[in-house]
Image (tube, rainbow, N blue to C red; front, top):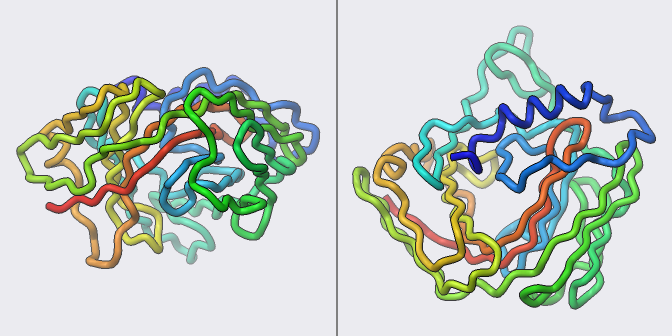
Length: 280
């Protein structure tokens, strides 16, 4: 539960930092966020994930979290279900996201300079573009690193301070469950070939892929080869609001670190990923 319920802790960290202006130049280096927990309200990420789905090798840094911000509606052990509230209606019309009658502007990309990744089998940098930070050159191979490789992710800073994060490569994820049948009121078992390398995340996403996901069942556990999703959380996971193509669900072996920027937490993930499909 500690690893999943993180929003309040993030707010406390931001208050301690005095609410620095994310647009101010020379803001100084970002700070250690103090945990490698998943942050549902993160304002940025740098993903270096082998074999992954869309945005597996990509980066984004913004002046606020993606809205509406999800909240945990059910927690059991190492798993939680998050649901994103539906946008409300603002008067006058909102040029952004309306949350509980308050108009929130769309998050805007923030410049930290070129993000450089070293320690990989090929050169990789993320250069700021129109839709986040694009990988340059685009990885031509899924084999980016070996287990135990030291990997550094750095940025010099620009509109906000830079960062220098050290991570470790993980073993390739093998033998992972590919299709999962969920039945309300019953637990579900997910398996993979254990490697004792990092941790393993299961992310089951609900919602049309052309919009922010509507709900998420997230579990993070030791890399021991098996995970049981509690029956209560299977039941708690909402159905999609439409039959349109959903976001891709995944299982990922990963290492992760987080830093605290003026607007919130930026996550850095090195991993090996496979898609997982679920039915209900």
